[in-house]
Image 1: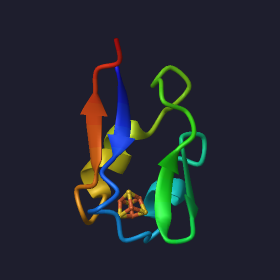
Image 2: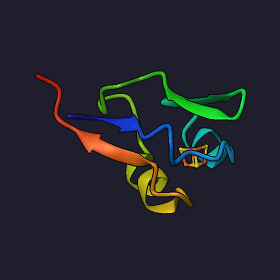
Image 3: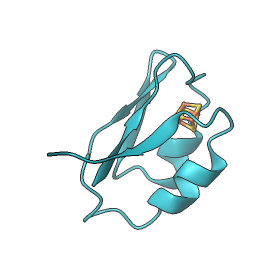
Image 4: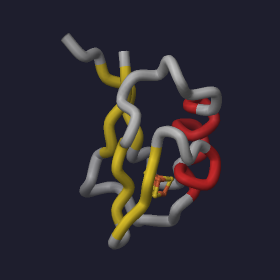
Amino acid sequence: MGFKIEEKKCIGCGLCQTICPECFVVKNGLAKVINFELKNCCNFKEVVENCPCKAIKFENKN
Ligand code: SF4
């Protein structure tokens, strides 16, 4: 279980990086996941719920 950014929706506001810098970095107006797995992240639910564009989706990784 992890998560991904829907790049077309992201506006690069930086909120995800502010809430959870362990998992997200925002560069050039686009967020990237830098820690795909949730095991080291404390705030992923808050990040997903607060993204203004609903650009962060949970994803199963096989
Ligand atoms: S909070 Fe959402 S819209 Fe803002 S940079 Fe992160 S993924 Fe993009």
